[in-house]
Image (cartoon, rainbow, N blue to C red; front, top):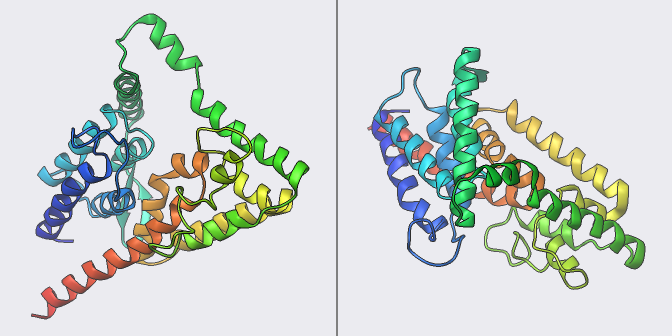
Length: 284
């Protein structure tokens, strides 16, 4: 990909970030806006089109993601920053970048510090040894998602199966449908919230278990593994979608596969548009 096209992608990324996270850019009180899937797609494009030597476009991409992570949004930006230094696209294959153990340890250490600073920003606290110990040992999100998973087991035992989470997953691949996505009433957390209070999230097995018990959870996992593998061994477009989905692994594993559908549908639309631009530019 040419630097001019990469610069255009970076420009769109910078424009979309405040829309997706209005609070950290002082554009609103809401933590989340819209366009989160677009951020993953454009970051994946910039990551895979990165040359061996970092240029101003790469540094700008890293800086905007460092800012977003330091401001409190860690779920996706952690992997964006790590993969920028660990993965490259070469001759149609995703391969590891050569990095020394010292550089890798330094990169992980910096990421840990950013994560700590991110947590401070989100909670509005100040650094202290007490907070550091709290940050390491108090895993509130783990408790939240485990609570939802255990609640899905209780729900099945008391009320039986509910197939709405499967409808939610399938609909998530169809843009603008009211049945897909995390905010839908068909989402597993919304279903459970009618009976058991929860703050959202839930291990991604939860939707499969609620739909058909252990068998449903197994099918859910098998579908995910099959789908990701197909993207990994596919062509250029599949590789971008694979990276975009991989960047949201923490969100998928802790909140559910319904986040994946919008990335795929919007990604196909954007990538088709980019390939059309490249085709026209090469032809004329």
